[in-house]
Image (cartoon, rainbow, N blue to C red):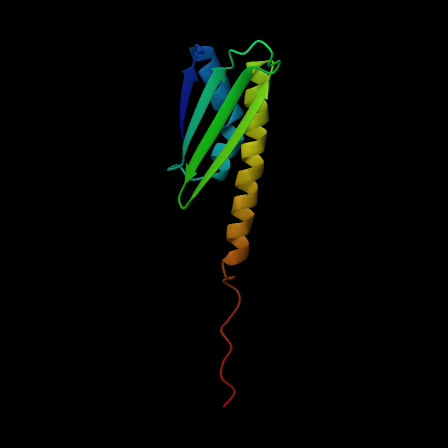
Length: 113
């Protein structure tokens, strides 16, 4: 899975990129290598907003796009919450796809003639 980390009004350093990659390993194991994750980190400039650190994730899969957004007063916490939400969505998406697929064990019924 390719991960692209962007910062809007926020500086993204190498240490933060490493933490993001480590945090999204769980999601990366569940999706294809062709999946692409866009993570946008920014800070709300309004002083009345307590949870001003925001993380938005968009995961592009084959046939689906999953999104998660979360805010916190700490950027690390916001990233953790987004990663957990995205992991839940990926698991749910995979389960749905497995339920739709016909099982390989089921044999077609032969005509009784």
